[in-house]
Length: 161
Image 1 (tube, rainbow, N blue to C red):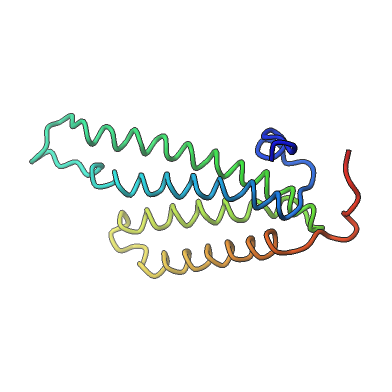
Image 2 (image 1 turned 135 degrees about the vertical axis):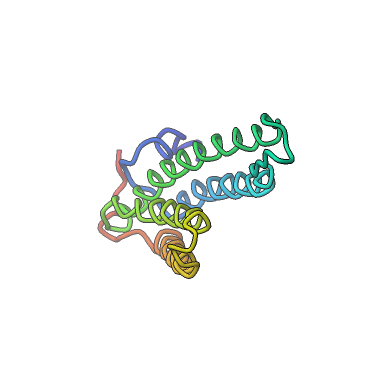
């Protein structure tokens, strides 16, 4: 990855990369997002604030919401990096780079729907979240198979400067 460059991989959507470099660039992002999500699941119970039994300003609740703000910012940053890496790989596969937006968009929409269902007081059925999660899993599987397994498009084998 050092020869490809951090800026080229994560901050620019131009160019092309092969499947090995896509894996080397995508796996660290997936691990970081997984660890950050595990952290949020660990501190999420502290985000519940009951004024009948807790003081008005509770350090654990403030900490949980600070983590949530950093977590949300990190997810957006990881989605942009993932888009840039996958756009290069889609281009290498002979497709338009804009297909790379499908996975981050599906992930954010699924997360928003799953978060909103308990706040909707029954207006949005629980099964809608399950359908969105299955659709997200299908998009993830499509990306892994297409970008992580598929070969370079033969007409794209020339080396770019």
